[in-house]
Image (tube, rainbow, N blue to C red; front, side, top):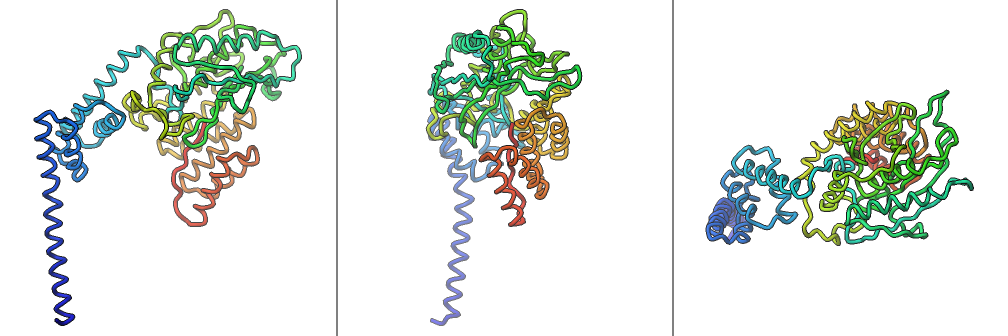
Length: 450
């Protein structure tokens, strides 16, 4: 047999294989579809789901495959994978009966969840479009209180009110518990009392916050929450017991994962300002505050949502009974749009504080509106009051410019941020910028940070 004949035989065999493979490829989805429909009629929903998923994955735009796939999914226990699959079809671009059915299922779930947990402001909770919270199975949270004020005259009620505020969160929620520890390295939440910065007053006007909270996390790992409280106001007065108590009560809410604010003045986590200080949160001076029903409902619902960032590795987190966050919060675009509105409201109430512009820059970045993001961060840079805020702004400007492929600007801002604080995250950012510069490849998207 000649070489030419061998080539002909091989060519014929390849063509036959292609025909057989093509026919099989077309017939297999139909086979799986029919098998799934039969299992569905017999109410064997697990088998129906498995078969119809095979058909759907082969041709996800086929209207029949999609419709019966949703039918199978809707009869399964709503585990996290089931919730995710139904939500993705409900929010997809295909406008058909499957999408309508999936949207109705999601709406029913959302209605039942809100009915169970009551009024809340869960939509204000996410950080960078994700959920950050502690693992409920790792309670009690360890709390360390540190007095770095260097003030020997600090009133004893400071420590007492801080402890009492943690007690209110514990008794009111019924799901969160705390334990004091003197070992800072073992603490989940660190409360630090510091002297008030000296550069907060200009003439007769002083702009300051009584306290603030900063999350410490890397990637998906939540390391700790840092609460900073100041020892005195700009006029040298100690805060009253009520001011201190109400402030730390509010900051604990952030430390538990409520990263935004309520729009209702009756809630502890309400965002408020004061004409004299333009503080982001001004505690009531005349009375001790209490958690509202909405505050409590929000935390309880938060701790039923699947976290994006927590203190347990994702593969070891107990996910049983958890809710897929977009079922409640919507798509990442919808979340970012709400965060943008919150930032605008922040700026309206506190136009001279950097925080609102930082939040606005983050929201615009998540919406891929990089020019608007840069403008917001540049405005924030003009308003920063300390090096911590300045680092956040510079880091985020570097990240936004990298995402927009402005490599030289990104590297410039990253080095400025590194001079302020040589953190792991800024080192990683500089490495990504240099890699992008060296390879001339468009950088993969870097998340901006709060």
